[in-house]
Length: 82
Ligand SMILES: [Zn+2]
Image (tube, rainbow, N blue to C red; front, side, top):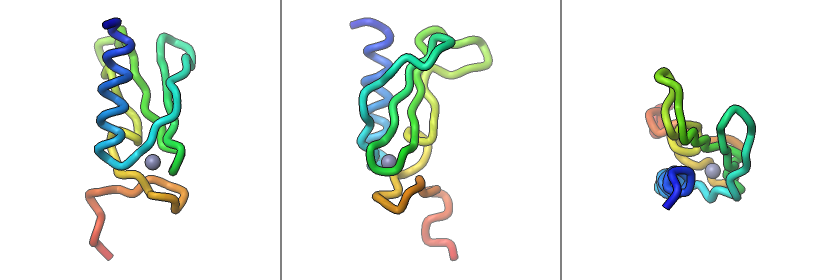
């Protein structure tokens, strides 16, 4: 399996764990590929050959839970805090 395919699979699984349903990954330049959640618009980005100060996978879709339709991702750290 190509490195890009593996990273896309990992990003898709991580996003799904947080409730996101990612669309297809598309090249966005600078050696990066990005996909957007169909529900909340959060993105996941993969970089097959990251620079030393970058990570292979990042983005709101792998870091915060899906908003489930309210228009923006929710921050799990603050769930339940008024
Ligand atoms: Zn989402």
